[in-house]
Image 1: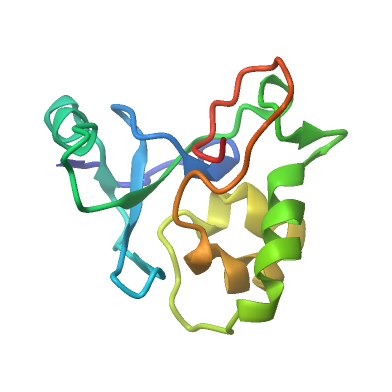
Image 2: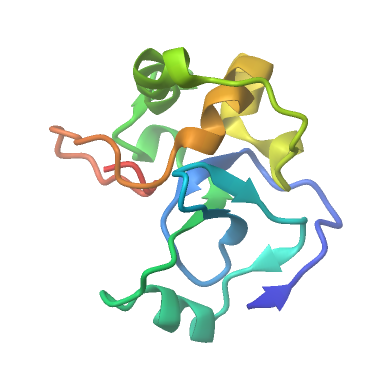
Length: 142
């Protein structure tokens, strides 16, 4: 893992991206099933990618990377439909939290729904949704 400061604003970031070199390391999934957010600056390098991609890895992480917008199967119109699905399923379990993730200023979900997105985001732990469309799914929600 390599630390890279967020010196300049990137385009909107998907908070549920796949593990790949260059992705932001957003958080670690705790035994409780909630995500503990990490400080800003951690990025996935090739070594971390190889370790985290092993099927025997018992530690799960959350990643963020550039939102692919219309190239993603979750994109509808001008927004991410994955957030709507996540909120529909997890809203009863949402909690307000003072924890701030490292990508909030650029987060697509936060841009769409503000604190309501942040209330369910710590509950998103990975591959929660199936996508039936033919379009590629660059985010981690498949």
